[in-house]
Image (cartoon, rainbow, N blue to C red):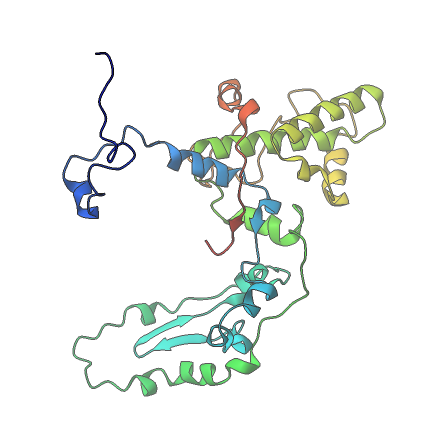
Length: 297
């Protein structure tokens, strides 16, 4: 009496076939099973990524060799500094800004002026326009594309933190996408400054240096301690050769001031690292990446 009767045919079978894809819109969208905070976390992870976690050369020789022939037919001019022309549209191509994608050393690129008039062109009343004559100067530049190739030395490893290009890049770019990313940089920058001040032989100073090094390692910023130019060390030691009062020595002055959103600005008072900001940073759960980020993304 207590046994449940089962159909032997349907016991291990689905009662109905899977519905068509259009069936998914039959009911209201449910997001209870999906995480909705991933965008914020992704931004934090990218802000805190280290150089060796990025695949700077997305198309190395091994990948190119496996591509169809038509994909590499124009390889000879992949690094040409020439205009790209499509009838009325002219856009300058600057491969010297992304040399690491070609496996080459990245130098500070030359300043390029953008021709505003090119971006103001519209096609109203220009149906009979001869664009080859209108853009003859750019056509001539394109015809010389094979003789204007950007090149440099090969680069196998990520660029050093104190490389002249990296110093320049951090000064001119927007570096952060999230407030936490900016806070993490403020912490790492301040601790690095302390580390630079503890390069003497005093025992107590050496203990401070060890603590600072452990903090930089915990926040995945230990690469800042390596290959530091002597000019950086000399500037810090020369400014602290005598024993200054604590009112004369700033605790932290970042090389690129930023606001709470991580965008560069010029404040009236140099920002300092507050205790609240340091508490807000998750030291024990610093984001890490399980996959490499491609420079082409």
